[in-house]
Length: 215
Image (cartoon, rainbow, N blue to C red):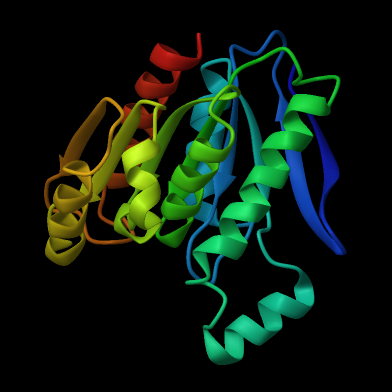
């Protein structure tokens, strides 16, 4: 049986909404760090989360910005690239998971999209014990900067073959990542993986990675 509930993660005065969904006896929990201008309602992340749950993993989909911050970002786009802020929010969510009764005893994985990938990698450095694996979908790991040298969690970078600029940025970031890292290029896919079968391939690759390292 799968159980779902709305939760609140606190970062100082900021209250961040999330949805925790738990299958029976989860083999791990995956925290989703969304990308630019997105939220816990991202249809792409929700699809991947559903596939993970079918394979026995719990998921936490959450907002990294408050409603007020999200409204500001919609006008100015100034917060979606604030990796320090986003990473702090991911760390707060990791801490919440390690304290919550349902998830305290399971390993944590982070699934980051776009700028959320950089935030996930920084969080993996800040919380190396609970965070056992990271997956990036169409991400910007390069924005994690010097933190890349300190990542220890095995990291899978998934990029679309038609997203040439991001492919290059991911290859460059791989050279700085200290963790075991693999790059998977989904041929013909663009940045949002909207092509037929592309998102399904992302979900398959992410599921395999998390099952491998969270077990």
